[in-house]
Amino acid sequence: MPQQIPCLWFDGQAEDAAKLYTSIFPHSSMGAIARYGPDMPPPMKEGDVLTVDFTLDGQPYTALNGGPQFPFTEAISFQIMCKDQEEADHYWNRLTEGGEESMCGWLKDRFGVSWQVTPTELMQLLNDPDQGRAQRATQAMLQMRRIDIAEIRRAADGPAA
Image (tube, rainbow, N blue to C red):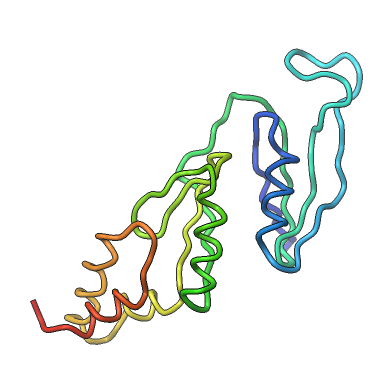
């Protein structure tokens, strides 16, 4: 299959977003920056950033400054599978700076991009073969914004409802 590179449409914030994301994720880097040429329609002007290529832990992305026509929605999000609570808290704390928390580990960063910060143990608990345990874990998760895996584990191990 050909390589797939997500392209994120920003309204003048592509370079700032790429800089933020590469500062948060390990093994990340900024790449080529293309700029608009002469005779651009407003509000673009010559020299403004058109696209920024960047890599987050080996995954390439492109950020495009296309204008205000297409804002981000929760219909598309990036799921960050975290090995433990410490790693989940790192991403949650950094990505919510200037952004907003949502439910069940979802957030919007300061640019409006949606992320799901998910400890891998959460998926194991939600898919536990013991349906009662899985249901208790699900109910605990549904009450949370930031995922607290220890609390979900306690709920899953608790008495049947």
